[in-house]
Length: 159
Image (cartoon, rainbow, N blue to C red; front, side):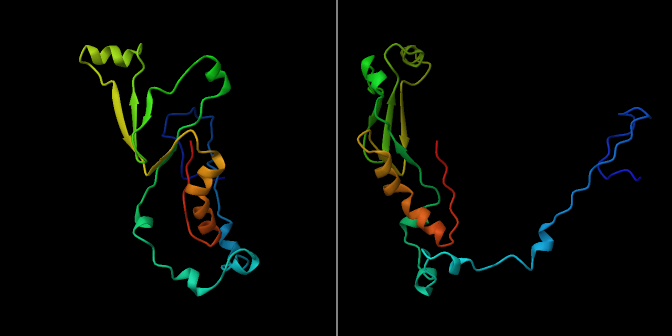
């Protein structure tokens, strides 16, 4: 049996240890004849018209990364504890301001001139606590999902 390409450096293992690296072989090359290039005809919700394929992207769609923020409403348990969202302030549809809570380390550090008590963040669009999940989906990613069904590539990351 021959030794594999990726073997450990000499002297690392004892003389009794023989390492044979596994060889991985791609099976994708064998699938060339069965891979179908055009699956649009199999999906009745997808239009195959040339009109859909030759759309010119608008200036708005040329933005490389869109970042949406939804400020969630307080949970019932948070309302019971009389918590508030006073440290989160939506300045406009694109700007969010975070203010350090009154008794926080960040605010105390700011008073000593060490840190910042206020941070400003910019997003493509901000949605307040009054906007539900369904509305948020419809206003942000619904069109992207439709584009994916038409064959376009998108990356959607949620947190």
